[in-house]
Length: 338
Image 1 (cartoon, one colour):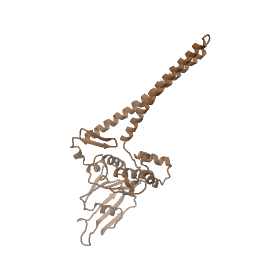
Image 2: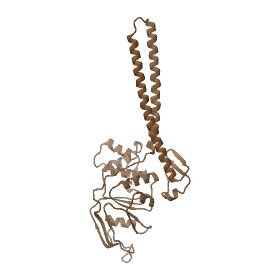
Image 3: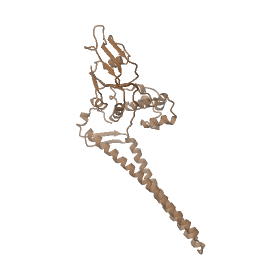
Image 4: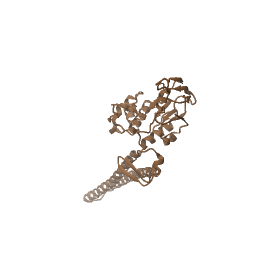
């Protein structure tokens, strides 16, 4: 976890510490070096897992071959017993059984050790993996006029307007728009206008019929006294079976031990992951995503998940953010500056 989202600052540092459930790990370099090392570590881990899987298959095959050879020897010995005194026959049989038991134990131990190594490596990989959430494409074709502002303004009083110059804005489906401006310039007010939450004091707004989802920096959709599993169930409009619901949560990095966790205790990153997971469970793909300072309460790992999800989303995107790196990552196509 890294607190700062300023990549320029992170890349000027000469030491990076990674905080995880395993503790703190030191990387002797800047953020770019850290990312490179993490990719190398993950690649090496994947190769280790592949090698252990190969070794496990080989050990099982070897054990099967040894077992079959030993059974053939025993079978041949049982057929050729004529003229052999019973005491020698019993000794041979006992020796064969002892050899079979030793070989069986040896290969059982090899298989068990290899399986344990594989389990430990896979658990390590699960801890390192990141969530990937993909939404289907929005239903609206690109280029449809969704919002049109004509000389729009909002008044603090009848004489003083919020913006010195009234707004004339068009937003079309498929656009990825960055709304920027200093604090107090009316970014949140603009969002309320384009969603129809408030009406302008001056000018006209034309809104087409479109669906949208608004995400603020606190992810208030998850501001609930429900448990994680209960929250997911609320979005299960398509009546997915219970095991499928739990599988979706696992994919969103919510294992069974978290299902009874109260949503009010979740971190910003956990709230973001849970809400995106809930949207996938409901199979609700909005025509427009509106994000209001989404990066403020996220660590770098959670921010990367959100950026990947939004970058792959094919619909209209409105983002209020001061994080230029995030804006670049999600591939905004134009900006509106207030």
